[in-house]
Length: 286
Image (cartoon, rainbow, N blue to C red):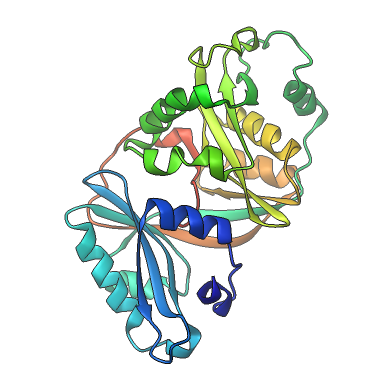
């Protein structure tokens, strides 16, 4: 946490606890005895896919090759797996030097979400049945929903993210699921087609992610459900080349505040249903 603050990041105690409990973290002790000089986190999604995040070097040890050394170590630890990450403009030159290539763009939208009247009615279930073409009904997830959530997530992501997803009930403030029929809300395996989690990044900011849904309309319903119970501002990390949800976010009070680039080291074959993935778990977990 001190290393995060040193580089101008939020302390993010809960996120660090999640990552240290579920992933592999590597660090370099500071020669001056003041904590860590550098740290990085490696998350494995099965034998052939991994992600890197939370790459940090203390300001006083910058430009000494620590970041490059840690990244080379992490790539070696990943073995034959393709490694993905979210790159800032500052980190991109290093990642390119190490052989990472761009995959897609990501834009962080932040603000106080303003749902429209029709969306509010859908959120509170004003109609007993979904109209034709509706995206489904949302409700709070229960412990019994976890097998269905894991199945939906794996089908969309194309790899097993269970080591993180199974920890979401203890990490997130709220998890919502998208179901086909509200009259079967007590049956956790009936028609669950999507889910999303909201977790506190800072005391005044809530991240919505992961967000898995069959289409943008369904994604909007899940966002509205979670935003209605969230505190402070909402953060969504969205692909600007899939314009429907970014446009909706902008219309409802969220503004783009930063941009990153998803990059990959190694071949990234088609897998899962990427059009069902709307936000990541975190930008620390590409």
